Amino acid sequence: MSGEFLVRLPLERIAVLIGPKGSTKKHIEDLTGCILKIDSNNGDVVILAEEELDDPINLWKARDIVKAIGRGFSPQRAYTIMQPNYIFEIISLREIVGTSSNALRNVRSRVIGRKGSTRNFIEQATRTYISVYHNTVGIIGELRYVEIARTAVIRLIHGAKHSTVYNFIERQMRELSEKKAAFWSSQSIGDYAQITDLDELERIIFEEEKKKKEESS
Image 1: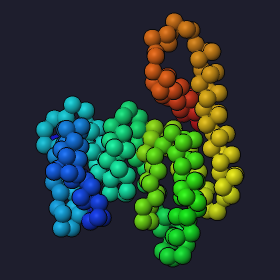
Image 2 (image 1 turned 135 degrees about the horizontal axis):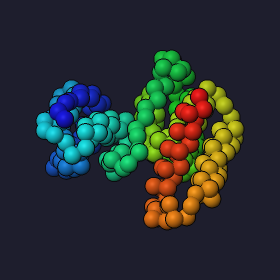
Image 3 (image 1 turned 30 degrees about the horizontal axis):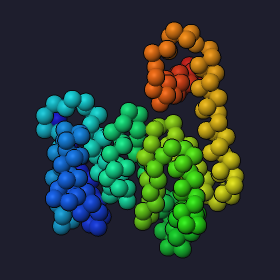
Image 4 (image 1 turned 90 degrees about the vertical axis):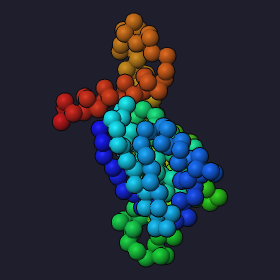
């Protein structure tokens, strides 16, 4: 599959994308099989898949890794997007609260919390990475956890109490754990005995729940 994406990064993030002696750029290319063409003058990054990729989704993964670095994530955290079922999501604060500098500053503070406490809680509770950068909030993690983190962040932006949001997160994560336990107890041990990766088991449960919702809708 051949194709390309154009991503524009803030100029101050270009050096991070390139890395010492080009090491970050090269690592992304090695991970994805894509080519990065970086214009350091205007921040444009062209992501190319000139040949057939081992996995066609790698072109989108490369784009999201570049975007994530542009939105304040370290390269090490951005690389996790390559893991199965991991996604990168951006929330535009301007689209929600407008362009008022005071409103934007207030919602950034609500999401970050004192000394980063709110952001750290959401990250640890939902097993995600979160970056509040300029007027965006970026989230990296597995799909089902990103959905919970995204909802939590949006509720904070709309003014929900921190305690209410924390309770929401804990409830959602508890429900996921209960679904995992129920799924396991309802299956023949022999059917899933070969699964030793708990993340893989959770992905199976998530897909089963998703399928049930689609069938009932």
